[in-house]
Length: 479
Image (cartoon, rainbow, N blue to C red; front, side):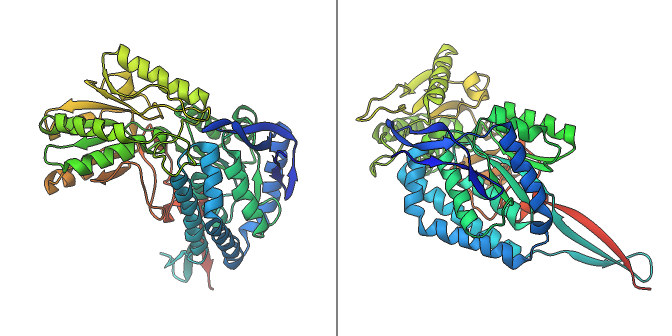
């Protein structure tokens, strides 16, 4: 019997089947059917969130703490089940799915603690007898629009702080991964959230997302996705004078210097470029390698790539799962063709693979002889495709690394304290890694980038407060 998952609007599960959720490892496997909201349902959700805001924003910290802690505990207790479902709908390996689920639990636990650490400031006024208090309050109704590549972690790092700081939510997840979104909302609902505080509206971005952008009753929008859609979110938000936060693309460099430990460099490149099938905004898609280590690095990369196991995400032996769907697979193949047309050498992979079950399998691709001017070096591919750019020394490597319209994350592999220190200071990225993959961040510190990658306050950690709250300054004359 096919499972039907409904939208949650004003505390009620509503809607009829509108879309099917297909396993990219086995397209014969359907996880379930999911309601697809229209403009009216989106408007109902926004109205419910608006009505629920006054009471929730004034609720005590213990009430918010209880909901977030219960949610964290249940996600952790069900990590294997939820992680398996995540791998089944998105295509990342079972180990990655469970790991992401644990990360979601950690995020809810962290922000449960934040509800008990809310603080303000009190200072004397320049006027005698006057006191000044500075406090933070929730901004109001927050629209959350999340992508398909981290279907439980990214919703968690938006929903948890939004609730912790007293906001109400209209949540629109990516159409490709509704099960993870539904699961997290179901857990929160059963954890005791009052009706209307959290509303789930699954459906098409062109319909539900547009209704959110058009509404004057949404006070802030946090969006993670493509650059093009992010610009639309920004333009619509300016029209309504609302806060907006954007996490968009990346074309992240990993610099490998002559003095790098070869094993560490290859580990960082393989993990950063190809794990999660390369479908991470933090992926190392540009491998910038100096002359002295270039040939050894390339040989070691090809040797490691040849040993990677590409297969069904649920198979414990699989190291790289399928691409998420046919559309993304075509985009990957199109960019591989573009790279060859531009004159880069496809040194490994890039072809479709057949497995026991029908799915979107692609052998990881590695280009050599590329330049930083090529489209494969400038545009985000969002798949298991990386290109090596050969440079003469550190100075050229840094210049090439910074020569990009994006600035999310960057990495360097070196044993030189001098170069590591200089790179951390001079890399034009929001996050910098030394002898670590560019993909992989902690949940209690800020996440975000510069230039075309991000806009607005950082996500995660205590820095999330900057987006999800507004500052109030109050003056009191004691008489």
